[in-house]
Each structure stands twice: as C-alpha cells, then as structure tokens.
Image (cartoon, rainbow, N blue to C red; front, side, top):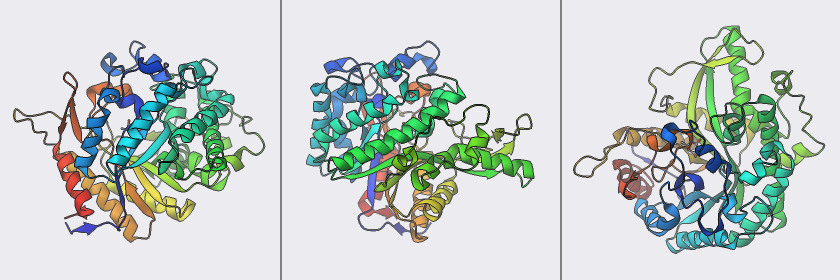
Length: 446
Ligand code: FCB
C-alpha cells in the first residue's frame, strides 16, 4: 500500500456521546431523558443493559481526556446532555450540569484539543417526550432555548458545533422501527419528527448566529451508499426509494430548501406533509459552515414485490460484521463525491465511522483488533482518495474513543479504540489506538 499524507491542518478526532459514556444519571440535578426511560423498559436493550453507569466518564473525564492526548488528536467530539442542563427540558437552568461541560471544555483546551460539541445526540428530556417529543412542533423552540444556553456558557471556547446527530435514527429508528427511544412504531409520527428535527436544526443555527457564534456550525447526518441489486426496473425503482429514505430526505431540505419530488408519493396515505408551514424550508436550509457525515453502511437494494409504493429490501451483505453490515470503504468514497458534486462544496467532516468487534484482552492485557485497524485504514484511504479527487474533506473522527453503551445493543457491542473492562472501569488501549496515534503523528499512513 502506498504511503499517504493528509493536507496540513487536517483534523484528526475521536467521537463519543453523552448517554453512551457519562453514567451518573441522577447526579448534580440531571433529569431523566428518553434513553433512561427506554433502557429500563424490559426487553428494550440487549441483556437489559442501561446507561446508568456506562463508562463512568462523568467522574473519570480528566483521565479520559488524557487518552485523547495519547491518541494525538486535534479535536474531540462529545455531546451535551440536554437533561443535565434543563432537567425537565425547559424552565430553570441546572448550572451544575453546565459546569460539567465547562470543565470538560477547559480540560480539552488545556491539552491543546479543539472541542466539537453535538447539542443533540438522541437524549431528549423525558418531560418533553411526555408533551409529544419531537412530534410536537414546540420542541423545536425548547431546543433553541437549550442551544442558546449551552452556547452562552461554552461559545467562547468551542470551535465546532453540531446541532443534531443523525436525524435519520431519531426519526426512523426511534419512531418508526421503535428499536431506539422513545420506542414508537408509527410512520406518520416518524416523518413529522423528521421535519421538526430539521426545523429545530435551522432555528438553532439562526439563533446561534444571532448570538454571535464564533465557532463553526453544522449538522451530522448518517448517509448511506445504496446501489440496486440488479438493473431490473423494479430494483432500480426500489433503490431510488431507499435512497430517498436514507439520504435525500435529509440532503435536499438542508441544501436545496425542499423535500424531494418523490417524498410525497412515498408517504401517500400516511402523511400529507401538513406539518410543513410557510417559511420552514427556508429555515431548514439556513447556511451552515460545514457538514458532518457519519458513514457505516453501503447497501444493495432490491424491490419488495409486496409493496411497490414504499417497498425496498436491503440485500444481506455476503460478509457481515458483528453488527450485520459489511465493510465497504468504497461506499464512503461514493458518498463524499456525491455530496460534494450534488449538494455542497462546504468543508465536510467524517464525524463518525467505525466497526464493532468481539474484542477481548489476552492474558498479557493486549487487545489485538487488527480488523478495526484494517477498517480504519481502508476508510482513511478512501477519504484520502476523495481529497485527491477534489472533495473538500477536512476531518476524520473514528467512532469511538472507547467502548460504550451501544444503544439497543448495550455493552455487548464494542466500537472503541480503548477497551473498557466494565467491572473495574479500566481503560486499555487496543492495537487500533496505538495505530491511530501513529496516523495522527504522521498525518497519514506510512
Ligand atoms: C451511530 C451513532 C453513534 C454510535 C454508532 C455506532 O449511529 O451516532 O452514537 O452508536 O452509530
């Protein structure tokens, strides 16, 4: 493999999210979020795991930040827990919750690491869910209030803001499939939720601009690279529908200020899009400074003969990983080219990509995760190829800094560069952590 070097100033990072690592769910005034409620529901999460303790990062944040120094990253992506700041989603501010993030940001700066803050990584305050959650348009205004308060406290030091992480998952995994909080299975709710999420994003971008935000503001979407399984008309039509559902429903409103032409047909009989009010799409398309892409999946798609309106089926990957999806770095390359050719020339950042493996420590305390190293290397080479091809890609953040509470899969699935022994909360570098440290040092792959 040839040696590759990334452009000077390329941002190497590592990513986490609040509910997945913090624990301390009832400490210092934090209120419950929909993930507290959901994870405690019998059968909702594999093996009954919850985020009650998680990686205990709330108490171990200082030594966790030292791990970032060992990795040599330029930046750290973490999320703020809304219910630490507003325990009931609105009303009085819990200063103790903000203090935690204040210390975290200072701790990062003291280590020379740029903070990238995700404002919403799926943990809606439970009190807001009781008012309808994201299906209630008023939640968009609660989000703006919350975003402004966090910005007022941290805005002088945060270099990168992300309003939302993966609206696809909140809308469709949380409100249609019901595999994530709040565990709703209703398609009309899901598409309403999606619109309100995008609206909340646009309103928050405007509000932060009004408040004089100094850092860059963006949003992160999980995008996929779907391809038809055959060139039959039916499979090509199914591929178009899946592409709408996984990509265009997000990209078109954000970058073109409109829902795709085929969106209304897809939702015919389910939703008439009456949740769209005058001016909403303009707000959604409020200009941002950079766009975050999370990449995990490339799909082959075939028609579902039982349903010619919305029917599509993802063809099972021949070589699935533990999470059931295959390893396809070429999908990342396809997405980067597509986004920059069809949607935006803004700087792009890969805000997540990674792989779950059945990692274990050998008697010497070593974790040989060579498949993860190969995964990272393949995706970094794809990223580099995209840059060579003219894509304005400026950063790469592997998911994740450390093993953590992997949502519906609980602690069974490990994505980290650091292994967590949950019984003792010991952090151990996997081979991938050592390998990644060499990448950040060399700004490339030797
Ligand atoms: C993404 C999530 C992230 C993590 C990875 C594996 O969808 O944003 O929190 O769970 O998947």
